[in-house]
Length: 131
Image 1 (cartoon, rainbow, N blue to C red):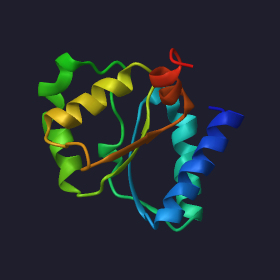
Image 2: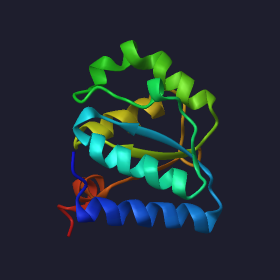
Image 3: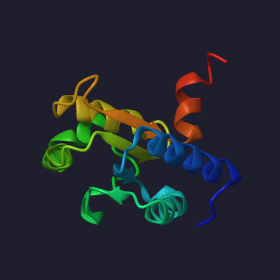
């Protein structure tokens, strides 16, 4: 799996932002469609002496996760919340990232409890129609 120039740039921006704020731990969530970006991000986290808080079994999400899947995944969300790390990097194909954020809300995370970061595809999905 290849990593695009934009994905490399965005990874650098996210890691620099984390360094400026002194953040050392991430929750990372990805789908199989974004394995290349995930691997690149993991490599760069290690080189920057940062850590991924969630174990590998708590990193992968179904590529086509929807709102209807929440009951099946409820304990998965609870386990991630119990780690008490609030910096999330989500590497998912739009629009599926939205359902993940919504499910974390349903599981108890609220504004101010969490900071979600993602690559340009998520930002474009949110703001692309406004620009």
